[in-house]
Length: 396
Image (cartoon, rainbow, N blue to C red; front, side, top):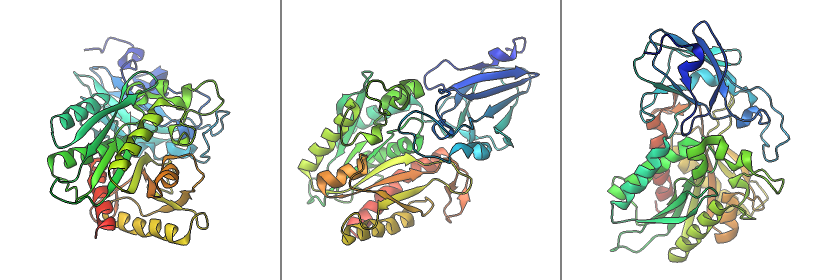
C-alpha cells in the first residue's frame, strides 16, 4: 500500500496513452489537467488518462479543463468549444485494466471541470475522460481478423513513426453477385475513440457472420492515426508537425497527401474500388463539446455546391442513418467538393456518396432514442448499426 507516500506519487502519468499532468497536491486531493501544450485551445484538449496508484485512504481527484480558446497553431478552426469543462462530470470513467470502463456516477461538476472521489484501493485504478480504447486492443483486433479466413488483412503502409497501418477487405459471398463496395474508416484524430470501438465491432461482426455483409464488399481502415493511438498527443501530427506551417491534421490532407498514413489509406481505397463499384463511404470522428449540442451528427452537402440530386441523396441517406443509428439526428452542411477532407476526396475521386459521422463525447441515445450516458457498449453498437443503414439505403 502507498498511504505513506506524498500526494505527488499517488498518480502515474508515464505509460502508453497517458495524457494527464499534476498541477497541485494538498490534503488528499490531487489536481490534474490534460498534459497537452499550453498553446492548444480548449477544443483541442480532448485527452486525459492517468493511473492512480494503490492508496489506503480515500482520495479526491480534481480534473481541471483548459479554458483558453485562442491559438496560433493552424488548423484549430473550431471556436466555441472551450466549455467542455461544463459537461466533464458526465464523462469521468474508471477502469482496472484499460478494457472494461465504468462511468464514475458520483463525479461532481466544478467551475473548471470535475472532481471524483476514489475509495481506498489495493490495485491501480485508471481514470479517463470518455472511454479510452486500449492500444493493445487494436493489435488483438488484427490478430482476430487474421484468424478468420474470409477476409483479407493487409498492412497497407507504415506511420510516420514506423507503426503498421492496416486495411481489412471483406469480399461479398462467393456465390452472389456483388452489389457494390462500402468504405469505412476511423481514428484520424487522437482520442476519438468512438470510431475505433465502432469499427472494431463492425469488423468482428463481418468476420464472424454476426453482421450480414448483405451481398456487398467492405473495406475498413479501423485506425488511420496509429501513432497517436499509442503515443497520445506527443505522437500526433496535430501538435508535432514541423516544416510547412500547416497543422498536421490527417483530415486536412486528402488533397496534398503529405503524410504516409493518408497515402496508404488512399491507395488501399483505390485498390478496393478497382475490384468493386464504390457505393458509399463513412468516416468516423468524435464531435465538439457543448452542453447545448451533443456533438453527434452526419455531414451533408452544402446546398448549391453540387447538383440538387446529389444533395438530395445525401439528405435521404441521413434520414435512413438516423433511423438505424442511435445518434442525435443532426445533419450539418460541411461536405463541400473543394474541402481537403476524406469525404470530399471520395466524391472527387469516385463520384460516390461519402460522409463524416460525428459521435458525441458526452451523450448517447438509448433504445427509445432518449439521451443517456455514454458507454463502451454504446460506441460498439454504432458500427453494426451504421452497416444496417448502408445496406438498407443501397439495397432496401
